[in-house]
Image 1 (cartoon, helix red, strand yellow):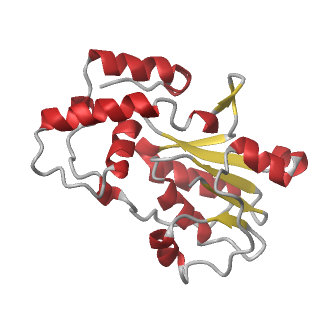
Image 2 (cartoon, rainbow, N blue to C red):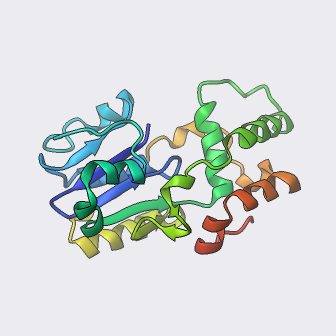
Image 3 (tube, rainbow, N blue to C red):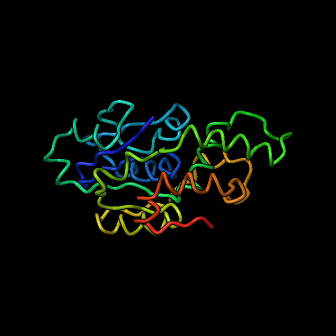
Amino acid sequence: IKQMIISHKYKYIFIKPMKVAGSSVQVALMENCNKKDIIKMGGDRVKNFYEGKIPSIAGRFGSHSTPHHIKSLIGKKIWDTYRKITIVRNPWDMLVSAFWFKHCKKDFSILSKTKINELFVKFLKKNLGLNHQFYFKNKILIADIHLRFERLQDDFDKFSNLLKIPQVNLPRLKSQHRKDKRHYSTYYQNQSIKLVANCYKDIINHFGYKFS
């Protein structure tokens, strides 16, 4: 489910891609939302975390809240005048995180690293392009502000200061899904490295990501 926040109080739109610690940012932002703001929530486990964290929830958009979908619902005036904020993450790392999220309920404890890597490559080939629609349209950036996953708290603090939002420490949500904590690079070989590099070249080039 794609999720988002539209804050009329602070005049921003939070666009939430997948597997970029977006739930942590969303929870932190909701601490200072009010009943006029529009919030699209996640599943029941996350909803339970939200209880008591915000005054109220005024509305929910549909489950496919891509930038194009959000703009079509709120109109050009709000879209053009509110700041758009999202999160970006090294694509090679993001895809490993997405793999573990998809398989979080499976027991891989008896599998070798080689077998896990084989399963990852199969997942990769079926999921190339994940999050593409959140960053560029006709080669132009959609969001005004991009928080980097790799320095998320620092970037979130800068964003909060810019909009004069009270600062909040980001919670850690969903990190338990990645059961194998080895570095993302160990999941890849030359061919799969190139697949990601070609598919995500706009993100990689613009934000300076490298495979390391």
